Image 1 (cartoon, rainbow, N blue to C red):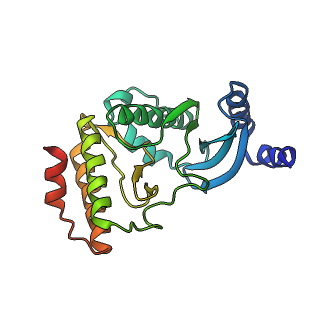
Image 2 (spheres, helix red, strand yellow):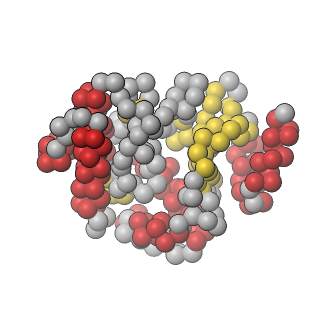
Amino acid sequence: MRREYSKVMHNVFDEFTNRAIFKLISQGHFDGLQSPISIGKEANIFSAKKGQETVVVKIYRLESCDFNRMYDYIKLDPRYSTVHPSKRKIVFAWAQREYRNLLKAREAGVRVPKPITFLHHVLVMEHIGKRQPAPKLKDAWPRHTKEFFQEVVEQMRKLHQAELVHADLSAFNILNDQERPVIIDMSQCTTLEDSRAAEYLQRDIKNVAVFFRKIGLDAREDGIRQRIIT
């Protein structure tokens, strides 16, 4: 069965991607892709086995990704201001950027997946969830709304203390891991030195406030902002 599945996966990806996957396997980061978690326009995300454990492999699309969106984000990040605006180099930088952001966020105590390694456009990281992947907040509303909301804001505050802003935070990229929020999709996350950082932060605050008001909480943008920046 595993051999047949490997054949299927080999037919799905281009040769460059297959070589990257096989190199990561040969380095011992995982044993092989297992099953898809999410298939998107920007990246395909798979679970993968590493012995008895499960990890996540995120494979950014080299051809069909939204290159212009990626470049609009990354060109204002001081860490990547000199990156060449070619599609492949931008996608590689995008994967590296997510890895770096995850490392920095975890160092600051933000609840994000642990990054394991990356190669070109392939990122390997911690699997969130026990047996099945933890659901996104949009699909699994918390039972204890107020406590969950407060914890989301606390994670935003820690991220800000690390001089980072998520820049695309919403219920689509917060996981509900047994009533604990885990922030994902950190590739567009940027530093506070980014000229649009304040705009991104306000948008994140608005998205969080709108969602929690939708599920019955009195979530106010000014209150969230005050807790984050002080």
